[in-house]
Length: 107
Image (cartoon, rainbow, N blue to C red):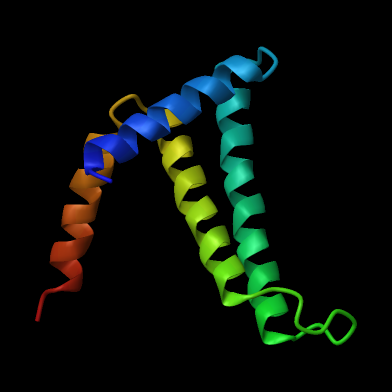
């Protein structure tokens, strides 16, 4: 999948979510989109706990494939939240990724 395909998909998901939700003031809709991100991060934690069997009552209840899937959900949800915040999400992300990459790769 190319970068354009990724962001086209994110645009389509964001548009669909916006049209499927009850009408809300823009700030409330944005806040709820951000809260969804916290929910998804919690699902990553649940999957890691399940994959490592850390809950004695449940034992091993997840796989590392489940963790991968939940991490993908976090990435998608974050991208949709960014797109909800700004129509220039792809440019904002590309610029930020370049800064983080440069900073991370400095000697």
